[in-house]
Length: 253
Image 1: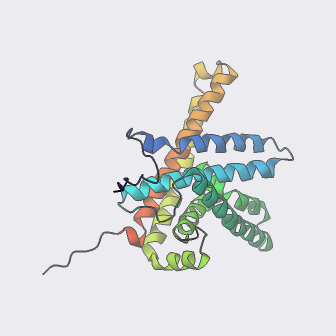
Image 2 (image 1 turned 180 degrees about the vertical axis):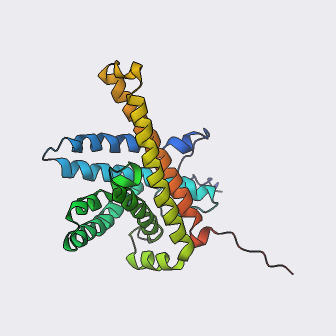
């Protein structure tokens, strides 16, 4: 008589609890490396920007899964293995690029050419502090849009359903809109805090006389720390505004 074997889980989890909060950091390290490479204004900067954006989206997916688990809702987007996460990040990247290009064109048409280029840095602004107020606002808006796109993924094919995304944006209502506003305010405040910390750290005497490698290490640690906090808080706030994550009201007799 054949013996039924226990079905293995889709993804091996870890018993080390704190790892759940830092598992996105390696992807943020990759994104930061691409970001620095793109700052050199080499002919390859579009590829660097694309690599950075995909790495940020992979970090976003990893944190979103954990946030959904914290709210007691398993992720409806099937992205448990690395291959599934990579395919989802590429699909998200393709969809969000269309949005950013359209926003860039609209800004240029309406006479805001100096700010139009920042629209292409929307995914960058999800994790890293932008140099302008508009860039920080746009980064928060793109983070909300990416979350809605993830929720609109078809459970069978794994493809993004734009119709489901638009319906979800309407269904979640004013509460999700309020969550987006809170994330915008948070991004602006955290950007100011990050700038103040950076200036104070660089002005600290032992650091000013330290080696370039030490200063680069400090820059990496500070940037990655703020990026992780930015994504975690954004997803926690946005998830709390989702209609499906609200606790049902108990009717009194």
